Length: 588
Image (cartoon, rainbow, N blue to C red; front, side, top):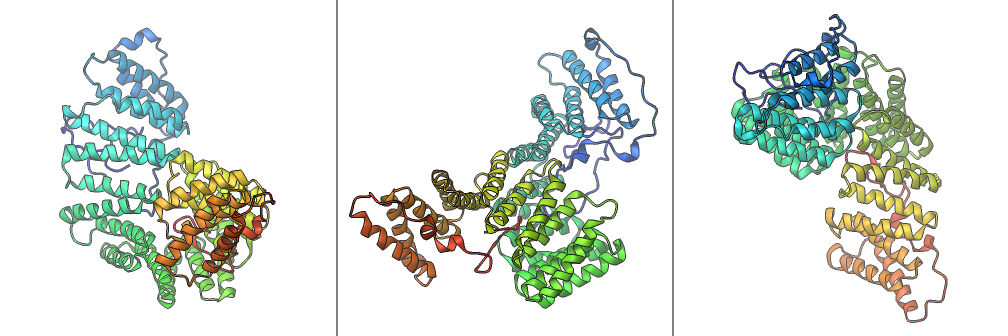
């Protein structure tokens, strides 16, 4: 979470903190390099390893409820909670102390006077709940904490309110509730701007943090707006080619890449690389080289992409060793590049080298790194018509992440990919189940309005068609149509595919007039806006002519075969044409 000390307090007043560690954070904490997506980490709620396991355990008083009225007890219990964590006894006993401390502060608070001690104790209590993985219990605690401060009473209250909203946002993020998380961050940013003004450097840090959250939610326009604001603030407060500016530009490049503006993304990455070189950040330069290689590959400038990847590979091998996951990640990119250029032997060799590293990860490698690598390699196996191998890798990736908090959206993306693999293999019941699980996760996380969600509903609908669950398929296609019309527009290929699928389903249900209405609308769009050169045009035209011919007589025939009704574009295999959804690797 950015800027826990983002609202300046008087020198003699200790800053409110979210984390449990004994020592207060410095007034201007060091900034860390930017990551591709926001990753509110549970480490913010956990004690620092460097401070644990050395102190003797504190004495453990067991005050009864009546003693909680003592105003000296709250601070004492809060100190005990911190000392218990620092002593290595674990958070369970600290939780009891923190609960009692919060109760004591609440009892001793003066009516009508907001207690910052109470707010601080609630922050610590929530942090302990999070360290135990009990995020649902942390939420009501933090909701109570943000109600305590009065931001009009000065910087200390503003800091408490800001910290509470940001910590609540982090907690929602760990629960996979992205929309609620973003709402909390936005509220925290408003409080910070009210206290510090719009151009303070710490406001820039929070803007970038919020932009990362929007990237995770695939809300790229909002992310771009915040990135621009962050760049303006850091230009005003930092030297040219600063680390802060480099981090901003890397995030802006990610947004531009997601929006298809590859030239702008390349410009930002080159400027970020120059800043990192000026600051002697060799490994960060290598990481940017990988991103530059990705852009070159998107622009089909393959020789330049290979050069960028090889530069990064040389640095990672020399600085981190041959078996580091960073080396494996470059192998994956090279494998993808050689697959795209038709050099399948080289592509397979790089995939195998990467898998060898992921099979025996070096100490410190996270499950998220391995799962991400396996997911990327699975996309390559899918592209070379090896869906069984792709499915095995996806299953391994999901197993690595299934117990990790904050990974619901990532798991949903993997399940969607698995649904596609099951569909390709003709295992339609398993495909439907995978899509259903992914859809449920995205609904819970608030991503029910994204284009990716609409595409997934369409895929689930196709699986239902294969299982002859026609009513369910129609409901899914209808929901997908509403989302894709809103997010992509009626002329987008994904939206047109859903129109055609829905028309076929309506015909199978005997709703011929509805099917005719949709096909007439699609043909009108193609004739007036898209042109009639698309091969689907003639197919849709003939389907409409047949429906119009039959509409003149009674509907006493059996519904037409769904296999003949579903639009060819929706039944294409990977060989005929595939497309990867940005960020999640989902092929449709």
